[in-house]
View 1 (tube, rainbow, N blue to C red):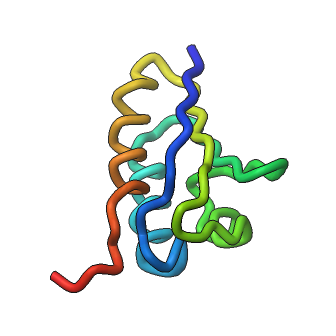
View 2: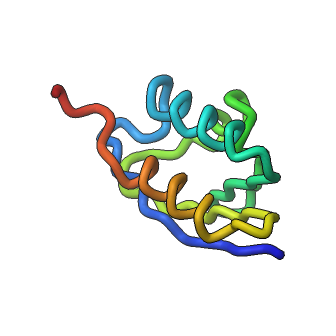
Length: 90
């Protein structure tokens, strides 16, 4: 089963080091194939270099695709990470 979701990136500096690392770790922990797409380019969401190569900025829309039985649950987790501003001081 495959599911997709379009998500707007919330981190004020986009998917750079810290937010990208958190997202990639969550994709790896999902244990299922996850793809992130920006424009015409798709990469393995579990690859930090792949994710960073997309050059995702604040407010950009990306499409997540999950190939798994629990795809919606995985999409919920990953979408929440992407929409959160990880650059705000706590």
